[in-house]
Length: 284
Length: 287
Image (cartoon, rainbow over all chains, first blue to last red; front, side):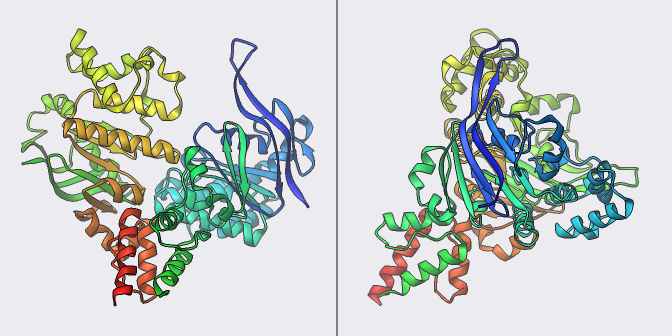
């Protein structure tokens, strides 16, 4: 199996600024491989260690114990730091904090310019990236006149202009309205399927995990569940125990079963859910 | 009696500049005492601008805001008095914590209203009881708390002023599912204990379906719908047109209807869905 990212017995400990002792262990002895081209969703309550984990995936944080390998390169090696960040791009929660230019295409060009690329190549990459996120027609707009979902897509375009192998998105939809959320999830899904970019998406919206290849659940700095969305959302009680939830479709199917209506619970999308309910109603 | 009335409210940013823009345009609505009102709308639809008028943080370019049938701008010098009647909890209120202890932070609002000594202490302890902040927390630094706890303390600071109307601007944004439930619970507890009128801005249609009596729908600065929550979610197509949606469970019922199955479309919560499907199945058997 070809892994883009490998974590080997990784811990991250925050220490007090004035003391030597460890104040808090955010990630604890965790091992994990992310397969090239896969779409992984990480779930976990606030403080479960998911953001710390995410920041270790591109070397923004260096593990205090263990090693993180990106495409075989250890993130602790100083000489290759830039190479690692070029391979793994990050998108954060608030789009306003990630945009720096007053014109969309200039913002997207910022990364490639810093790589010292040929102007023709920059032009090509900016256009390609904006098209990939469906924002090409806004290339001459001002970012602060755009909606939250559009701004977040510009932030993503800025990342993919660097041609990363992998994108890490840390709650990119937390500040968006329903339409903006759908735009981001669709965009990321498309980048994964069509461009083969590996995606790691951190989210509090359970329904965004529906189409992932793999769902990882974190609690207190360790992985407590790892599987396909259908395998993970079966564990309604376990998820609620760790402060999470299930998509409302799953909740409905479980509630029906509890009330004596035997519908299958191994589906997630609205369409599939409607289908199993329809089948159930038609049974005599 | 209407506790709040907004009449033909318009707010224009950047007047006298080329960037002139009506953030809120000719909005009118009336809220009865004790109601829970949800405000939904796409980002940039004017929701936050609208609610900033309710306690006089912004002055309308045009139109009036009446609290208990009195124009809040009748005497501009008195505008601060309105702020203890109408509490406004901003987005990410935890960023506004600043005192050394949780107690001092919660006491800041009531202190500014002129309370002191035992009276002040009573205000703070009462609100902590209502929303479940443990007494041992009061001496802690607010900065040592977790994100969800900080937000709870920040909200308590507004509630301690005992506003008759309390407005929340996206109170659950950025929280995990448990954190979201906790915040919605303390809002309900406060309302139960005080009978206050509650106005909530949120992007979570599922929570809106569960908690609100009425929904106010904003789009591009205009009020497009103001009606009982169930009536609003019956207009699924309308909502989708303006970038919103109905709760997921409602989408399942829309799909069933599309498949030619005779189900009602006014199903917005899992409980209601179970009840409806139970009856549908029983109806089949009887037929």
